[in-house]
Amino acid sequence: MTCKLCVENAPREKDKSGTLWVHPQAIGTSGWVCGYQEETNRQGDWVQTWTGRQFWALDPRPEDFHILDIAAGMRNPRYSNQCILTETVGEHAVLMYLEARRRGFSARDRRTTLMHDGSEYILVDICRPIKRDMPDYTAIEGRIMHAMAARYDFDWPIPPHVKELDNRILNDEMAQNMGPPPAVWRQLADGPLNVTVRNWSPEVAMIRFLHACAIEGLV
Image 1 (cartoon, rainbow, N blue to C red):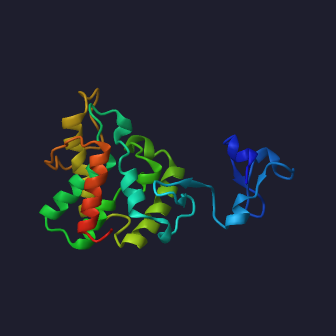
Image 2 (tube, rainbow, N blue to C red):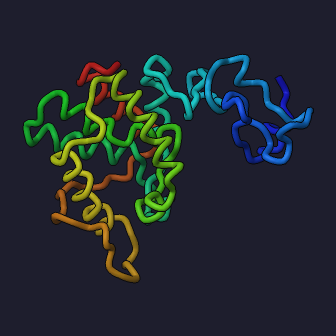
Image 3 (cartoon, helix red, strand yellow):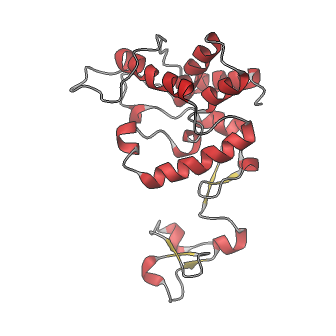
């Protein structure tokens, strides 16, 4: 189906029935209602994944995920790519995962650590100072992570001891891969994790993320 609304990327809202997405100025008129959702029985629209699947970010289901799609998305950069050298979400996840293994985390906690930024495979990374002012993004992220956690058997929200790793690694990433800060980073806490950022290429990050997934039985 070709839809004028979708082609023009027009803003959308639900109609009175709560089922179809329409152009806000077109409620009660003809020609602007997108009937796509009526055909698919899914909320929102879909994006194509690396393996050629459809993924509905507004209506994620556990069976929608494929580990190759997630690994491909882990090639996305962190920090809006404002680092000295690109650091991918995949490298960030693997560095945390290796520290979790060093600390003797349980298998479930290791999976949680490895997949803690899993939604960014499709949503990309949004920097913390911006994300907290984007409630719609946070809500969509939560839907994806809940469905992904059900699919791959990890915890969401992540527990405090995993969150600690995520907070502490910011110190390492800032010190090793960012220019001199113009002001104090308010997000820093707990001291460094003492890991080394290697700036793996996107392809290497994808492969190493998949290797960790294989170790943890996610492949």
